[in-house]
Image (cartoon, rainbow, N blue to C red; front, side):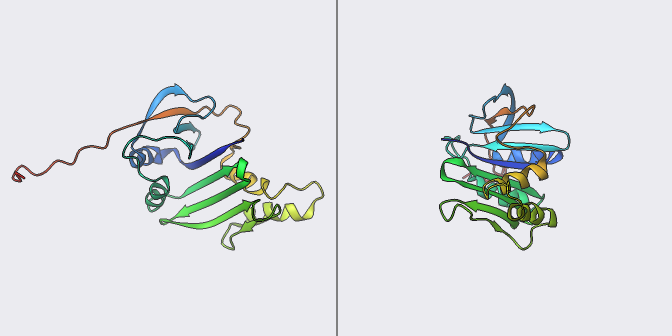
Amino acid sequence: MGFNATILSLSRGDVDHALGLLQAGRTVRADEVNESPLSLAEGGEVALIWYNPGSALWVGYREFESVLAELSRQIDLDVFDVHEGAGYCTVRHYAGGAVTWMVSHNSETDPDNLQVSSQAPYFVKEIAAKRDLAEDAPTAFEVPVAVFAALTGFRYDAMGATEFFELDSVAAAPVSKPWWKIW
């Protein structure tokens, strides 16, 4: 079956803002195998939010993609999507509310399918170029994995000492009406 996850990388200083948009709160419950709908790992300057797209999330939960777009209007984000069963893997960089560059592989299109945005940074293009130069080069699937690892120091299938903790639903604050409105 394999992994099916979306992993958001952001600065630790921006975590509380992201959790507010996700209507999520921290817990002390370890998520050792990343099975909860949302979990968080914080270390150094980077934080990772692990989202399980197949999970049943809490009532009133907004679409994850809309949260990413809203969050990226204020901060830069790197987002890694992997679905091993479908042979799909991508890294997206968000800035200013939109995706600014992307590296993507979809084996259903072609086993060697690899798309790299022309706006991608030079180091991303170097990682992709290595695939074409060496006999023992990584597969097209491994290129987005390597790019995300270069950006974050984290590889989704070799978590090592990275410790994730479950996130719980936090109800949004009710909107109160002014004292003078009686309806």
